[in-house]
Image (cartoon, rainbow, N blue to C red; front, side):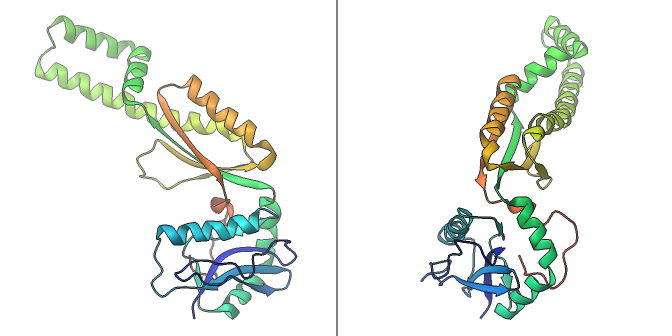
Length: 250
């Protein structure tokens, strides 16, 4: 039976949720696989595992139960291993890495921040900041809208200015929020957001981080900012690029 992995913790973690219900219908019983000073929170995996709402919530519930009382390295939904001995083998092989990550993530949560431009707001901003654009727009206005070529030139210039603003505002979002966090991780490209960032934040500094988010909204009204959290620190379990072949599949 394939083993489903929820997270990794210290063997002495005070709230390992052994016996609670996990993913699947009926819910698979959660159990603990121990190796050395580490423990993996696992269950059997359904044959038809899919990211259904029920199972996503069950995955989160198991991590929330364990994470409320101590550091847990959360595995992303769908992390699998061939069987329990394979999980134990990886715990032994990567013990140093997992211990380091448990220390680094103890008492910390993740906030995912996505930012995009308010269409009208950014147009007002680029026009206000660019005298040449204002001159082009004013010339077209005086000419009753301008010729096709003049309209095309203005449109292309506005698009180029907005694109340049996207790059600068992405840097600005990170610059303003990073000091309130312990670490930052870049989200995937091509998501449609000008910034998609995950921040590692100390639990006792969450208020400070959210204050920084609110200040960003107030001072950059042309940027729409969404902050999602607190979350298990998924984006910080594997800070390095290498992934040994024996690691549980995820």
